[in-house]
Structures are given as structure tokens and as C-alpha cells.
Length: 183
Image (cartoon, rainbow, N blue to C red; front, top):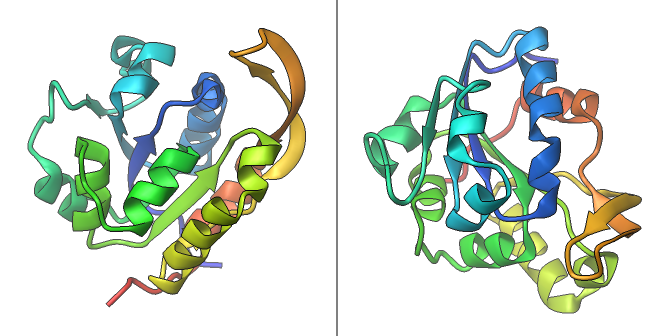
């Protein structure tokens, strides 16, 4: 296993799984990740305000406050982790689209990118989502398979079976692994 990245770009897309970020960030810092810059989508910022995330990150960027721009952010990082990665974000990046600061940053990144999906299990099993995951992997990106779990579902306002991001230890192993940068 290689060393953990010193500079982690954390991409955050809009899922209720955003609420678990503080635990992951604590684990990353404890393990030795020195600098973390978060890039939030507009929807992610509705779940977890940037000001709350700023307590745990060195910098937080949004579409409204890009703080340096996508190219600079993409060059800055040693590693990028998209946590959580929604079905929408997976499809957008898989097809090379860049409507947000996060997607343009991922497309401009010079470093390995890891996606950690979280979504409804029916969505995860859809052929379109699986095709997008396959495209991301073909492009050289790392996609961590989510695990079965339970999550709060905003639509039903209930705890339901879901596909969730693996524990922080699993993600730390992936972040420390040597990964090829797409050509």
C-alpha cells in the first residue's frame, strides 16, 4: 500500500449520504490526510451547508464561489474522491459533460479519481447506471462498489434499505492504493 495523499480533493454531490461526511473527514484527518479541499454541488450544499463543511476542510468551493477555478483545483490535488457520488454525477462525468464546478474539476484533474456511489438500490442496479460505472472504469477511474445498508430516504422520510458508501477504512485503503491516471 502506498502513502495516503497529502492533498485530497473531495467532490460532494447531492445525496442525503452527505450527512455522513463529518465522520469520513475525521477518519481521513486522523489517518494523515493533511489538506482537504471540498467542491460541493448546489444540491449537496442544500444537505450540508458549506459553512458547516468549512470547519472540517481547508477550503470549500461551490458553483457560486469557485475559489480559484476548476483547472487550478484539478492540478492542486494528489487524489480526488467523489463522496457521495450520485447516479446523476456518475452519468455526467462518464459522458464527459461539465455543467458544474465539480464536474469540470473532475474532468480537469491531473490526479487519480475515486468515486464512492451512494443511492437507492433500484437505481444502482439500473443498466444505465452500470453502463456509466463501466465507462468510468474504462476511462481509468476507480469506482468503489457500494455496500448494502440502511439510509434515511428523503422521499419517504423513512429508514430504508439502501446502497451506501463503505466504511472510511475501505476508502482510506483505496486512496492509498496506486492508481493509474487516465491518459
